[in-house]
Length: 436
Image (cartoon, rainbow, N blue to C red):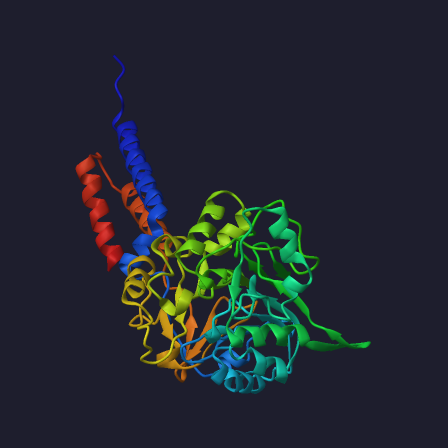
């Protein structure tokens, strides 16, 4: 009978141990996010600086403090600017002042997420102060208290609504009869901007899933609202009618801005229904692998609906896994935003809290600004008088690699006749040394 030599036996035991360790460490990387959250590694802020560390960056996102409302300014590297919402009417002048302070002289893009006054109330002041080339509005039609369409509601006067209601028996849409929304709709269709040949009417589009802006080093992509049906015709250059929701908040778009391989996500006041529809489209293969990846690696997420309990659902947060969350809300607001259930989900799912610097709030920190540059690995947050560098500490895969290398060397270096107990003892000693 052939006998296995001591040398061969040693090699076999060492090989099995090394392969087992590598397999275990590799499998653990599947749950790297959960492990990092549990250990408190992989993210969290680092370096303190000044406002200049943000203002000097070529890409900037400014979450403007407008009390219990929303308004966000984005400054792109190619000089273009975007404003998402403008807060309540009483904050309109504050938004204008903030934009002027940031040397904004015109707006290339103005996104109105939905009809609520805490989002569109300040729009008229913005439209009066700046020329706006492209305006994005919700598929919510302005109407009078009587139910008749408002005189300046272009979606109705152009005959689109008549066409769809006659063609599709199940076609429904949201009608908004507030004075502030009616006045906002009138103002956006009266807006003009200057071209080389003179003044021209601003372009007005409907927010819908599939809209995209492709810049020199960035993309802006709409992932909601869901289009009403795949076989409907677009409204000229305006866009498509979108799915009917009973809650006006759910006409808010999900917008992802990608710059320097980092994602900045905005969802207006979108609630559970929109997040559910979005995840169904994601899992249904509607979006490309690249789009899906960008949505799963969100650097900063502006909490939906001011951090309410009916937005930022468990499944949604598990999918986007934001490193930082910004909540735009008013100090001691009557809605008690951010909601305690939202704060609990943010902590348990994303390891994002006020204590570790991952959760930022306009009610406590005022205006919050983020700056990033293509050639740098870190962005910078400015809030409450200090700047926080957004970096990453050690990642779980790096720990696994270190453990794997050290244990492999330890196992290989075992002298004499090898036994499993001897390998285990040597590996434990090397592990203790690694942990320091």
